[in-house]
Image (cartoon, rainbow, N blue to C red):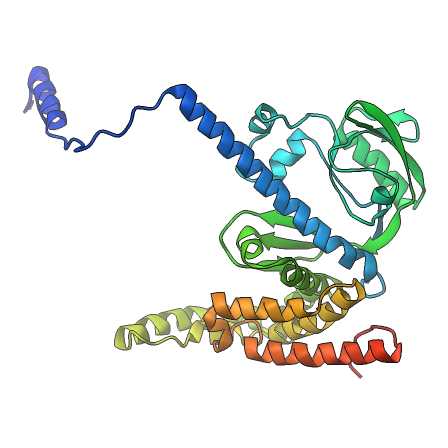
Length: 364
């Protein structure tokens, strides 16, 4: 049975459209050219900010990698250059495509996105934005070929000549690689105030980089590098499997979530988290964090960093995440970390005064 004819249905739709609310005020009319100009400005700014974060993170990590090979079980050789091209940079800068980078002048050939200050390539004269052409007199057509050829040189720890162009002027950098800790860096967008370590990579969130000064951020990088060097991810995985925590911690965390929800209905001012307490039961997690703080301070000191950066970092965490002062989760409480850091700093300064090697104390 048909309830509405086609003309009647059309009239009903037109009636509903005409009944839609209209605006009260009239904003200025914008020309497409003006909008496009603002879009271009915003892209230029976004590209510059994100590249700046990549450079900042790598420049702060480099001295830690170069100074702590004695503490890193896995090392590699490096010339200290962050190489890229348009496609690679598009993958690194989340939310900005290679075609958008092309429209904003990023070249499609291989170039030095950044050169680590004090590193082999820097000392040989290479600088950021130099176009990289090839190795030892052989041209390489793209970044993939260049990286493959460079990888062979670095694996053998061989010196080489890197051909480049700077503003159209050719140059050659004679580079002798150095040994560094084998750890990479990833910088990701997001407001999360966090960093974490994988088995061979340190990840920094933009939210953390916004609130930390260079000294504090370098300590955080040292802390995460210590996690990599001490193989905490592998050790933590083994612990939760062997202890059975892989089964009971998720169950307790789920039950804690439910209990927290019920208790907050009874007491809306309640802050204590049973879920957090459940996760903290996973064996070794908190002790690994304390160990990374301790070893990270030694790594920072060996790299010539400012140890007070640790104090600044913990004070910032306490200010931005007040629960870290009193709510125990996977990390020691912030007051404990501050006190432990002060004790470790005194230990380091005492060793330095005595002329002793800056090596953390081993468990006996």
